[in-house]
Image (cartoon, rainbow, N blue to C red):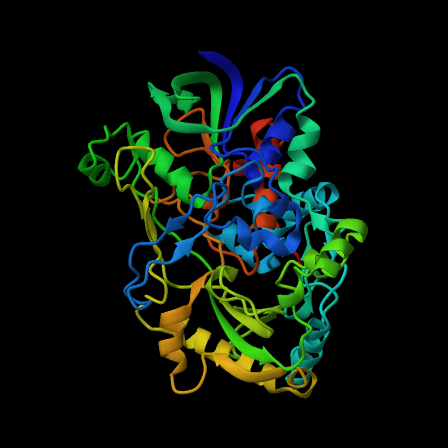
Length: 518
């Protein structure tokens, strides 16, 4: 048995930040446990190559249960299983979300998480992460932004600026044209410290709870069982694995735990509930000219990347984005349009040809899903029920339909019609509604399954402590109480930066007065 001050479960975006910040105190012993291995695969550093990591040893390779509202399909949900987590496998888009998103978090009972409170932590993160414009945006990406302006979407310098509504080139987590993950920014510099231990290929099986307090974890490593004791356990395994681990440890809905033969240690009905995700649908058109990323893997492009850190392989694929309202009367955007100079269908795993995609993304879904245990065996994947497009009044479906219609207008606008040819998806002869149900996929942003709040269904409080227990926190996307208008990497890094201050006693979220921007 080993003894530490902090045991962090998961070396993803949040875990890397926490390990770095908590180990800044030389008197604290920090143990970071990661289920996957090292982040050495060459595809990790090549920005455009991220889909090649899907369904490999670097991916948990999850799928949802059959989604009755999406033609009864089981949707593939990639989740990174390696150092750096999803920051080592994502599309590198750095999108904070709007100030209104975080003010809503505070309104939902989470004092200290309004925009004025979290904005300094975004700035702290941005001073550590490397965020830069794309080095070589595709010629069709420039045309997309001009076309968006032609249909009335204003052009912005950055969607992370004072105004989110509008279109802009994507800012990315890259350095000199290569991916720059949370492991690069936070963990690697910290690994020189003697008080930080990082173990890979470790599968945590249980959080040990004794007399209402977390005292350590049990895990499998190199074919053997082991235990690490500590004064605080921090689950940072993500919106799927963190609730699964809590339930395997006897923390969760009592009826569900007993159904799988798990002893109830602490009943907490909200664990695994309130799952939210951004649903995405790609409107795809052929490209009239051979200028797209379909040519990215040619020898000249490979040499340009290796020698100069430039060219098509530096693309993050989602080269521009626009935040728009599906209805004029809405107070803020509820849709995102992501432009990709490639036919991004089937998660980019299929054969490529010269085509263009405008991804329509539902930013404020009303539909809620859940994560459940499928077995008491920690090696068995949990059951994911996303419940996309299941809201009773059909608002989610209507918003997506309007987004598809807007994407078609942009393709027909003069600036982009030079490149955009025939529509491939949805294509002729099928309704938008049918196409949405048959081809929509995740945008890889699950949140909410260990929701932060002050109500009876909350899993963690505003200090990110698991309600009713001591010595146990959750710090990752699962605590997000309402999904943001943006992408999840930026807020997760912010969450972990702020959590580190909470854990070290530098701030006390529950006692901070709420503040609002003018």
